[in-house]
Length: 135
Image (cartoon, rainbow, N blue to C red; front, side, top):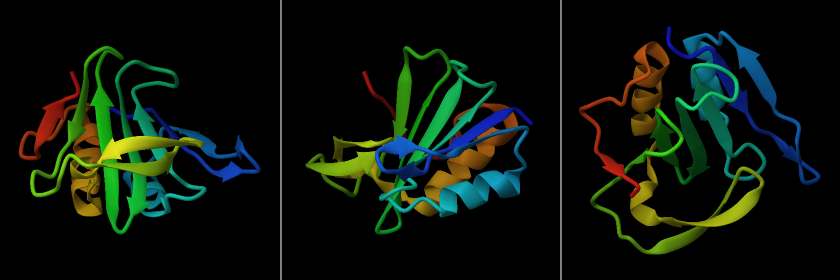
């Protein structure tokens, strides 16, 4: 498996008391993603190593939708997009702070799980999903 580190945040009193796990199983990753609630559990980060440049971030969930963003070098970022949704900005709580995100970047949790599993296995973006460069 490609992913050697996972961090799942848990915001309590403005501090992240989440867990980092080395060599997580796919079941652990899946569980962390499904536990996202957009309130205190907002983000799961998958990486080749802790603090590595090759990583995927799954944030959410808001009405069964997640943000999915990935990079191989911390310079070029790609997001999953749902073309049926608008570019209208919405405020979402992610990683301990509010931020503006396009509605179309909130994709069904099933897409997030597909993307995460492909990344978990081989560190790649699943080609059958609609990725867009963030440049």
